[in-house]
Amino acid sequence: MKRYVGLLGVIVVTASLAVVGALGGAYLADRSASRQADPTAGTGRSATGSGDAGRGPSGSPARSESPARSESPTPSESSGEQPAPRTYRLDKVIYDRASMSVTLLSAETTGGRLRLNIRYRNDSSVTWPVSCPTVAVDLVSSQVTLADGRAVRPERTWCAATRAGQSFSIEPGEQVDSWAVYPTVPRTGSSFVLSWYDFPDLRVRLR
Image (cartoon, rainbow, N blue to C red; front, top):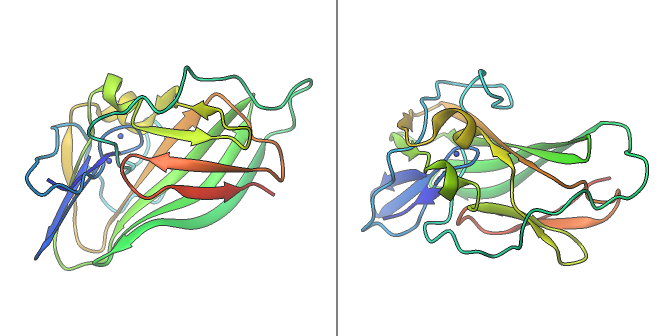
């Protein structure tokens, strides 16, 4: 999801704060209060799963300008035989403000692909409006940058797969789970940087 402040994003307005976010592949939050979120996301009511298609909704932010920060998606960073599927529990905070948070819960590697599971949680006393962008925008609104500098865009996201162009709200005490799948597998022990819509970049190490 992309976050709008003015993510597949998600728009949050609390007193002087406006944030928008998109679910697993759409605009989740843009920080320009003058803008409005694109009508693109799905409703999420206390979702606790990883936000897979046909399961509970997921939340995530997107970059409004959709800057072309990467080249075309690249294949897995690892060469030769594919490693066995693994799940990494991460629980790394991407964004936390006014009791509204976005957290990278886990990473899954399988078949030469990296799936990142992200949770939007609203622990504030006000509603958090969110929306998903169009498929085209959503698929260029996040990326992972590998240790060798290659930037890889997602090939599938929660927003693009199930909620493109839809809007919804995360009520107080509720959460929404989002995900994105990238056609790469970082080498074990190496780090990569996750750029999730317009939220702050997050450095991640799988080990």
